[in-house]
Length: 53
Image 1: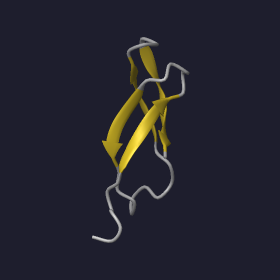
Image 2: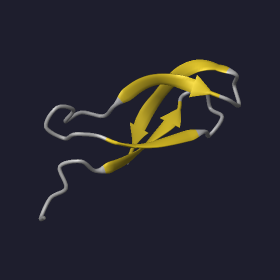
Image 3: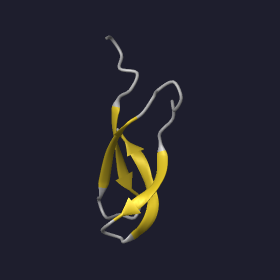
């Protein structure tokens, strides 16, 4: 397998807490960086998480 079509990516909180989620993404469906709204337990609210490479 030369290029992984589902790479592992880190999602870092935009709240500045440093909390991260680890997930996989499909490069064909999501070629740009992911932005997902998830729960940040440190901030105790839902915030945007952006893909970090």
